[in-house]
Length: 83
Image 1: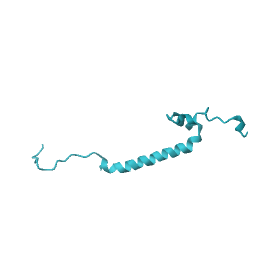
Image 2: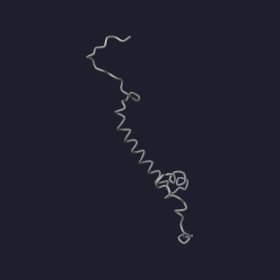
Image 3: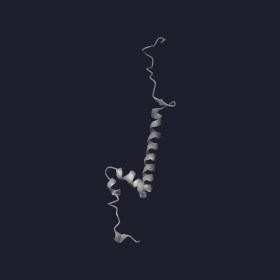
Image 4: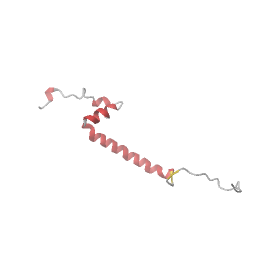
């Protein structure tokens, strides 16, 4: 049962929240966490670039620069092989 509601009272609406914390308060930490995650992903790809499985499964599938890791393109001539 809804009681009397004055037309001059405040117009309250529930705000969206996660575990009691409003979404506006979560926006800035979420952006910072996304930035750190992006940098961490680039660091992992930079460190793992020499691993053939990473080259084949991940780096060759990047649309514009994927051909850089093509094994035919990166083949070392026999004259440059020290062994």
